[in-house]
Image 1: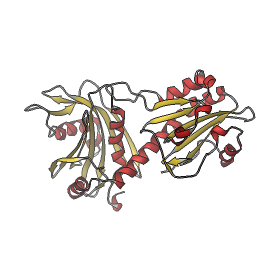
Image 2: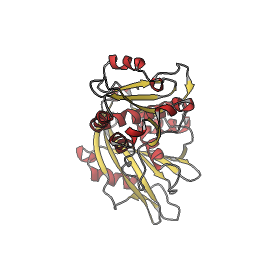
Image 3: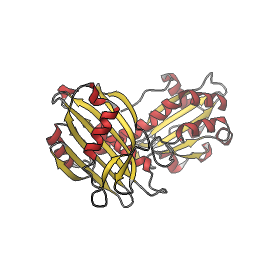
Image 4: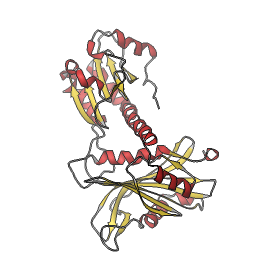
Length: 337
């Protein structure tokens, strides 16, 4: 999925090729493999801009803490390089944000380009008459800039999930719920019941899992936050903890965040918060997505969780994002969209 330019005309995009600075020109059109890890961001910015308000504005957007994690992690891991240092493998990074000051420009703007020197790659160029003008632009359009990079990471993950899928888990979900879901390889089926499917992905120091469950829709009250939490506790209790009699439940220490949104015309309820294990000492973040399957008259919920007790690595953020991306691989029958 490609995203439009942010308040910038095609003329400004074309103008980038005429800028008198080699660091900001497209170096090649060859399809090299993009470098870097998910949610890493290369920021090309001079020392004066980086240590001033422009750098502060960029960090306020991209290094802001990810909400609803039980440890502080930035939205992106930023690596700053100077325009002179923007060479070699750096130009092939997956996420690049370049800043350009040109006193002849009338105002600040941004351009979005894809696969400039490698694939998959996103390059956003901010240009304006001064560092102050760029800082003001970031302050005004930070959410849009962040969304462009986060959407690019999401689209890469969705494409990977569809290309390298775990057919067995996807087939069980389709059989139980009549819904197609792209599940990436590595997930193992842990429970298969008529109204509840649980799959998990175990790492050396972390665990990532999700459950899909369904129950009768009884009206708008079924989608109220308290009803969703009650349903979550009822179904997720089927996930056992490490000791006899222990099971997963929703933490009561923090109130879950709740919002409703539409995705491709379908109304979803999102809840995110923290889970605990009743009868043991475990916990972590979760995110759930609930909609109404009008063909069956039932509530459909996709609920994902993460357990990553290591505070140093890997990023809990990336595990949670991986759960979120699975939503975009769920397809209801065409008549239900």
